[in-house]
Length: 362
Image (cartoon, rainbow, N blue to C red; front, side, top):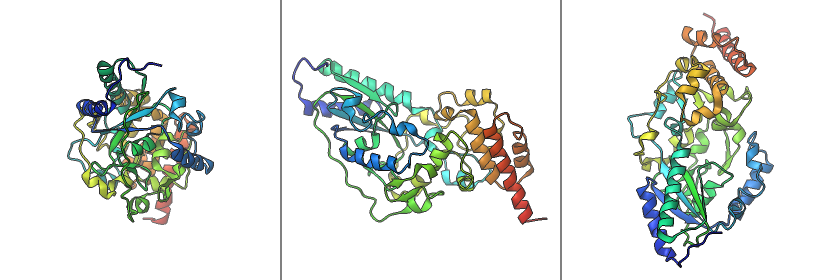
């Protein structure tokens, strides 16, 4: 274990850490202890109910997720940081959702993948601390290990986990990423912020698939973000019509949240939309070959779902779109695809249009 050779003024150091974090582009930094026992009990209940679906990794790694010292021996404090991601542009997400021929992609995924950017800056933050006090133990995480980032962020004073289970900051809404720097430094901790959701239930009422089964309770198996990103196999047929034109993630619960009137636009150029994905057409994206998909999604979080799930998702959206010759041609172009996964969803999309025609014969 590495410990500072001197006895630092940890209260002063904590203030400096927050200042350095701001200089590195983080909008807020807070400090939490490592007691996640309450969050552990909630996680156990969630897993016991099977709400994690195919996300087996949520149940793996033993207690490392809820007991930070098992992930980094000697961990005493966690520096939690947030970084806003909503791009500074003239853009109306709701207009994209309302255009059934447009492809809706969750706002966080329109730009460059945030993982490397934030992790690099967390390491720079650790370096600055070392320059001040000497060696100490640290480990940086950005959604890269079994870390309960929301529970940590709550303890670090960033805000509260809303009824939709997404972090809400009273100063910045919910459009931000989280990252953590585990340390063995006995820094003073910050105080949690009170929950201010009150009686509001807009996020619950707007969810297209009723995935928010109760306040603060999410059944991921019904969540569109899970269905279009984490789910590896076929999307349940009964949920496909509810997905609409959302081909990667879903922001509906955030779009209606009153706290997002305080959302602060990001100054990070890396988070600006790439490849025109903020207003792309479904039929255009469905034409991408695997090579084109890999090239156009290089450095993007979207790349992790792979070309087959990309086509699966768009086939569902095309099945939900109003029938036009272009939509039918697009679906038919993949009807003989080598992947059974793709063919199944293409067949479903074509069947949807055929069923509508039978109900409304010319």
